[in-house]
Image (cartoon, rainbow over all chains, first blue to last red; front, side, top):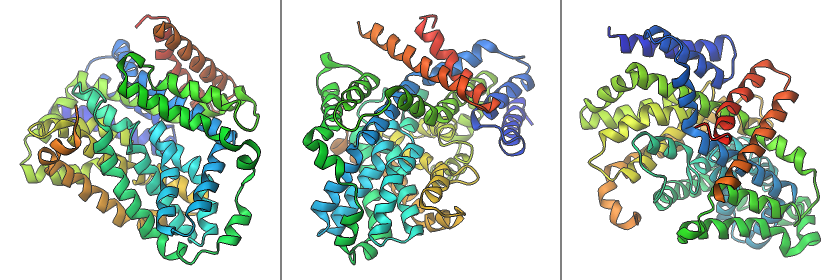
Length: 424
Length: 48
């Protein structure tokens, strides 16, 4: 057995022990496993490499923190409630369209923060009662939230696994928007209709209307939507006008600052602290993943995995990718993207790398449905008031398989799709 | 100019993470906060 394989096994073992036996947060377990890996490989405690690894995701951390502040502002100001009311009021006669729009709202926090947890806990917790009011059972509602969270995390503009995979082979996060939109939105619409349509088509609109929070719309009128519109306009300008390149963190903060004056008043400092608090575990995981990957690279473990992936036959690569990436997500979907996503992307370099990286990020995202961590499934079950999350995972098995098939199809036909969906 | 703005944003995030560090009750979460702060502080000081 090679020293690289021994190091890898020790790293995985220490991580699992930290997570499950010592009940440490995932981030700290990753730090311990990185230190253990370095010690086993005879590198001592390489402080410089550990700090170097932390820097891999500093930009991403800024996006997550500022996006969460923006998300909380539009939640506290009443904008999210107002958008939900408009959608139900305008589209209740078209239940299929209404469900699709509700799915977009559920996905929205994930789309801007890149975190499925943010989706499920913020917009998900607002839309869950609305869905249940419309007659969708508890289990199906939880499934909609869980799959919405996962697909929201992958949908543009912010997709952390794609950034992580791209960073591994120095692809800038640019030109991903359309491939990611095509990978996520069709699936999201299929899933929400699959879980909710048969219940919503029999909805009693009068009963639902009575329970909606219509107050922000009536009280503040159009101005309650201004932060949302501003954020979208600035994002578009950011992409279209290079001279106007503000960056996502600044855009989120500008829109959040405006949002403080367009709706309900709230304690801004307390809200900002709570926002950062809710994303601290994700920020810590990214730091841990950075260190984990840095030590894997330092000790040759990453090379071992890359070589193993590259030496697989083509069919074997597809099977290995479809099985190993969601399974590794039990550790962390970001870890899966980094440890397995990068070598798989290297093994498919003959194909258009942006489409392949986007599809790999979709497959890696399923890690958030993989027990025991299963962040999306656990939080979705909690939000709807279910005691156990296993029924959610069972019910989501078919959608998860569909996600894998959809991702694999994009990789297989990446070169054929490229002229139509890549514009960089 | 944009560098200065981003250093200010980083300082804001450091302040919020630091605030959480001191109000967090669990030691593991305090360690998590401290870990997150290390690269942010180094970046805001332009050390790296």
